Length: 176
Image (cartoon, rainbow, N blue to C red; front, side, top):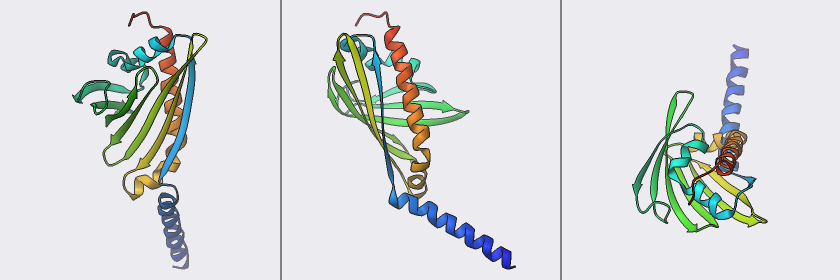
């Protein structure tokens, strides 16, 4: 009986620590960067091309434009991803666009997280630096507590997506 009390006490302590993580650090921020051997206008056009998104966004199954004019402030797009047999839906809303410079978006995965995302382009000597900045916030106490534990995985996913984007841009033959 004595060991059962200790075990329950440890479980309770771990649960309180887990919940405290969500209060202390409810959001995470990370950045990623690549340099592509293509001019800025081409790099921007490839990244904005919905037909090319499936080539660089890992696990994407479907892209559905919901409302607004594609690529403009207020446009809403629904992305369906499949990973390990599990389907996820993420809704993107464009917050700001400076053509050939930057685009900021909110991504919402209902009941899981909200992601504030910005990607910037900068040209130098015929190459283009592409830098993303992301802040994720969990929805609900459990997901807020999970966000710090998932930061490394989400950063690795963004690094992989940008690496894939680099490959797609550098292999591009379409004229925009």
